[in-house]
Length: 310
Image (cartoon, rainbow, N blue to C red; front, top):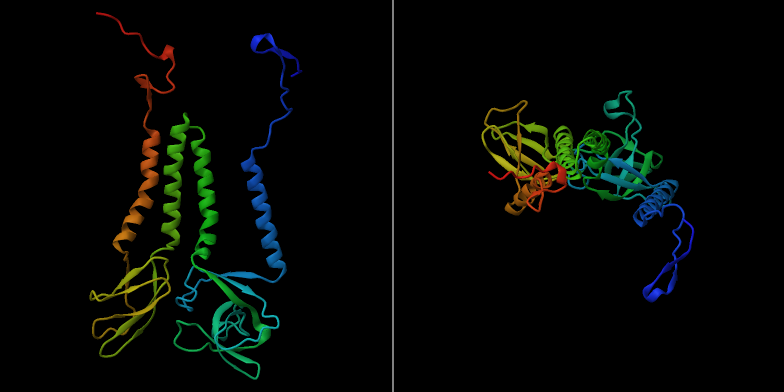
């Protein structure tokens, strides 16, 4: 569009403002791209420095690193490995002495003697069957991020499901209807992913101690507090990664079923109900027709039939 003069107040000629060619990039897009690039730069620099992350899949470290945590390690470097350090390592042989693939373990150092390092999981009853050397150590644990491992496991499935919901709802008419359908669809996707992975409520029975008063050794592997309930109704409350014992009926010496029941405080239950109910309520409110001037918003004049006097 070319420039020119337009009439102003009192007939004064005012120069016409030229419109900049093209379309300006929104500030939020620029900020988002800059943030992503900064995160990639930081992650790349950390990886170049030897920083590694590992997803905890077993309950051997108890509350120190519960199942679903992400442990962050740095190379031992010149650091002197001492008793009490938590390290990630690859044992010299596979668990059980077999020829299976060697997998990384994250355990605590319990003894160091003449270069031989003994390790043990905090929730395990005995030390590991092997000894390792400094060369087997991948890194020393400097941070534990509870729940981050669960997020990484579920993220691909959640993103894929949300993408499908977005595509399927793109054909719905009306912005409010689309938004409502997407809220409900995303909630369903997340509910299915959570039901499959079970990150919140779960436990593992690590053993049964027989005797006059048998008990089951259990570890909570979910993120939320649970109550472990035995066959006779005896129970114990466990938080994430906690180890406990559940009394069993006399004579029990084999496999036993222990139920995990969500055990929240009253405030926790309220928060859970609100968190689950908000998407549904918002979706219903958005799907309701809005009225302007006594008729649904967006209705054209020609769509309204004139009233006929009787």
